[in-house]
Length: 303
Image: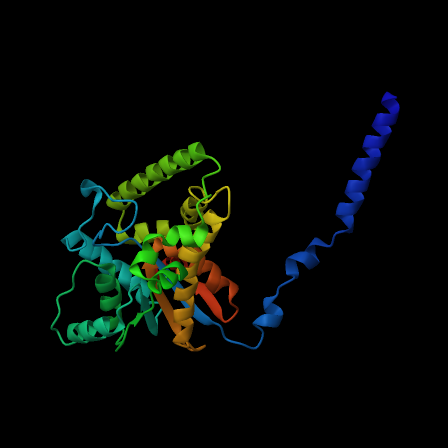
């Protein structure tokens, strides 16, 4: 019986080996959809610049401790900002997109800044986008933030209906599949956010932006949305995430598309880093765009 098992095992190993030999790995590696989709076109280059909020507005669930906040107006941070902007300028963006709903507000304020009538405040919109736009001779910045589908539905309800909006939309049966898991992952992510705050405090601005743009950082930061409150006994978790966070980011992407960037444009998208996982997916999936990384600009600058 033992000899039969040995023979069967050898036969299985031989079969697996033959199957592996029959796979043309070179053909698979060389298969490239862009040979069809992008051939003969010139994709619009895009730099996705994920940021933290320089003015710490406290609107996100995570609040940075006072001792970990950096002062963008300090001499040291202004020096670091200048160095980072010099790297980004090498991309030569032709359009700059900002995280704001207020197009007319920024049209007026940016014009005042260009005329020397506005002193820049702490927000990254002012410190990065305004400075960069002025240095590159831009006459306009593009405010492309978006609300979400849940807000759109809620805005069409009466005040009384809004009070019970969640119940009307989802029903009342939803609960977490595993509360202990939610508590565990929330605690782990709070620890991660605190560690990120500590790193940002001790890094230069350029180092911080490079760290935030790392693919594994973007992926794991997005993972918080899928690790707490998502896994519900009904569909409320995934529906809420789709109608709130995914809806907002897809609308942001669509707002950028509405500006009709051409193949000759090089666009810079300055948004909170939490948005970058989904926006990266959108821009990398759409064949009319080619994503350029901050890391590649840094390496180009120092070569």
